[in-house]
Length: 137
Image 1 (cartoon, rainbow, N blue to C red):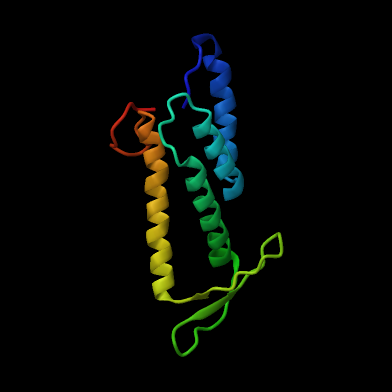
Image 2 (cartoon, helix red, strand yellow):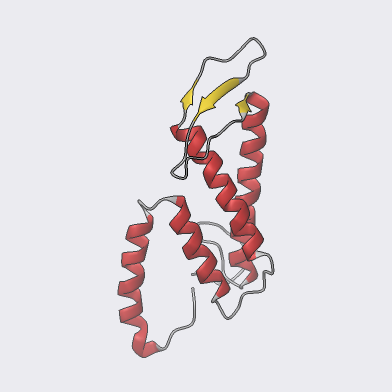
C-alpha cells in the first residue's frame, strides 16, 4: 500500500489489479524485486533490513527452484539424495538433501514468511489474510 490522491484512486486501482493478476503466475525473482521496490519506496517504511531480507529471499528462491525442479536421485544408505539442477546462469545445485535438510529449509521458509509479514505490519498495516495488528488493507 501507499498513500494516493483521491483523484488518482481509480487509475491506480486498475494498475494494481493488473499487477496483482501478473503476480499470480510470476516467478519469485520479479516478485522479490517488486516487494523490495514497494517497501523501500513506501513513506511509512520502518524496517531497516529490507535489502538483507530480499537477499535471503533470493537465496531461498534459488534453493526452491532446485528442490522443485531438480532431478532427484535415489537416497543413499545414509538417507541423502543428490539433486541434479542447473540454473539459468549455469550454477549447479550441489547440496545433498536428507529429511533434516528439508526440515531446516521448512523452518527457514517460515522465518522468511514472518519477516515479510512483519515488514508490512511495521508500516502500520494488517498483513492480508491475518488478524495481525494494523490497519486493514
